[in-house]
Image (cartoon, rainbow, N blue to C red; front, side, top):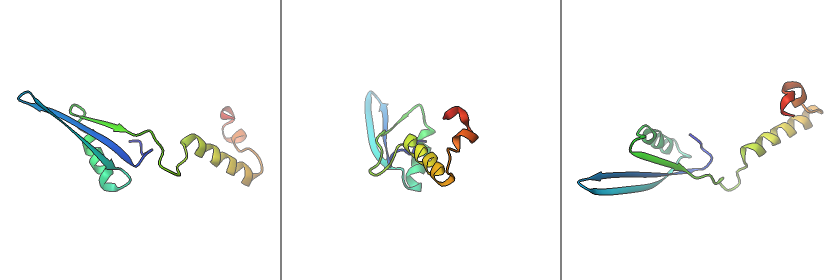
Amino acid sequence: MSLSNRTCIFVYSFSTNHRSMTVTAQIDISTATGRKIVKQLEAHTRVVKIEYNNELPKGAISLDNAIDLVWNQLETKMGYDIRSIVCPSIR
């Protein structure tokens, strides 16, 4: 489960006797209860479709930017680019 955002949109559709119904819910996945609900819903792939927002929460940084930040902080602290020793192929 990707936790790139604090909410996930849950859409549930069903039909009985030619009547169909769709339920849309917004679930806060920053809490343990919200994550538990989403995990339970993900188990029902035939009847449940879950869509995650791709927007970052306010103040968050992307994963690529976070990785660059960590490498840059290590370089500043160590005095050299540690990537050249650990994994020269990604430099």
